[in-house]
Amino acid sequence: MQRQKDSKARATPGIGTHTFSPDTPAMPLSPDQPVETRSAYKHFLRIPTRWHDNDVYQHVNNTIYYSFFDTVINAYLIREGGLDFEHGDVVGLAIETHCNFKKSIAFPQAVDAGLRIGKLGNSSVRYEVGLFIEGDDEVAAFGHFVHVFVARPGNKPVTIPETLRAAMKRLLVS
Image (cartoon, rainbow, N blue to C red; front, side):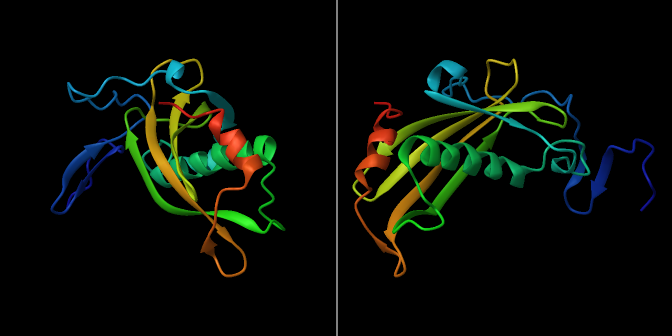
């Protein structure tokens, strides 16, 4: 295969040519999918991107988005709900995650991670996260993350402790 002149475009056998950069336009939304904005979220945490978050396509690698999800969720649970992930009897285990990508994020941009609770059950919770580029009102990526709370050491599901539940209720949307 001949090397292409544009260093950002690469042909992948069976896939075709793809060009990625921080200037790549947002992915089109389906007509039935409204654009998420900051007003849809109840809590925010600013997270700086790091040099090594960028991948060979010169934008933040998709795996890092899940790290942003983890960071906003667990920082909130620790600060507002008293979660003790090191020594506590109860911890949340991730059982489901999903992310929709709408705009590229790249170092050195900062990310404002928005958080809300979509569903609060007895032993599980569905967090909904929106990632916004600092200063941008429209979401760059959004998704969800489900925790099931378990008792250590056996990891059996338990009722979410009241201090955590109270913090979660403050972010609950109908």
